Length: 422
Image (cartoon, rainbow, N blue to C red):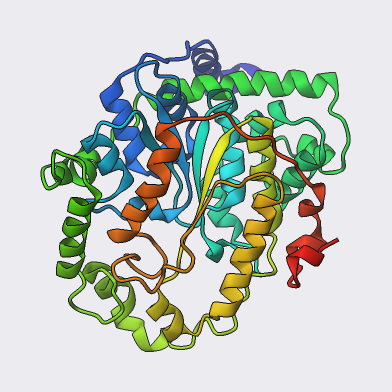
């Protein structure tokens, strides 16, 4: 009987063992190829967002300074003024590496950052905040899980210090991914308990396996060559060789005028046709009861701030606008929206994160927003005017003053005067 079972399952077990050994002992591949790194940086894909190897390879390239641009879906709104296009055309001293996807917010960004902590330490970053993240209802676990993997998990377990941030992150992880592996260790962290030596041994073992797996399969990933040609190279010829904001503004305005002809909301034609026109009546008054002042996202944002402070990252925060005509049509309260922005800025600036480009009041400017909530054309130019000087003249991070109260439920649900928050 045992012999028969071995004949059936033995080859499978041996194959599994060989695969495990191959992955575990596979050397980390950090050979640099600048062109491939540019493809990955501009791809703004799920893969380039959540996988380790492509990010590490770019951020360790000695010949090019790739800077993490963290956000959500705004990076895929390409046009001739997109930051990837301008950086390439004018041979900036840096290249953006876009980290973000639709539905990804601070929690996904936090766990993704765990994979590249040594690469971003004492560096710079750009972080785009969308007030639309700050909803009363938590986002769907499926959305979080789509951008989460076991490598992020073991990286987090390796990096945690048993502080309030680790406790909060563990609680959020258990809620968003209740079926995750190594759940017992995450539960310990959520309760503020210390991990044992055995726990750390297991974590280190699986962390090395996950890192080697990322290195092995990362080289077979789909390259972003076609996207790079379409989203970056195709626009280069349309821009003047001599950099000039005045000249770029004329091009951006002309491009916007030609591509916003089928609606009176200033939206790009294709977006309006595919995402809005069919259900336009449904959207009327749809957001009149939205409230961005009470949300667990404020606590998740504190995870990001806590990590940036620990890693001594000098970061520029960018706050996106909402298309004013869309805001009026859907009934989204301008007063509520600005109060939410004020709350976000207070959380940032009171802790020393004073590099903030706030575009929340530019939603009514012509050709500033490309669709409902994302920058485009003149918005990208305004973005560049804030980002390029910041990155072209790098400075060390300022002294941050973290406040643990921003992890509290009281803060997450607070809707009063922020200066009176105790």
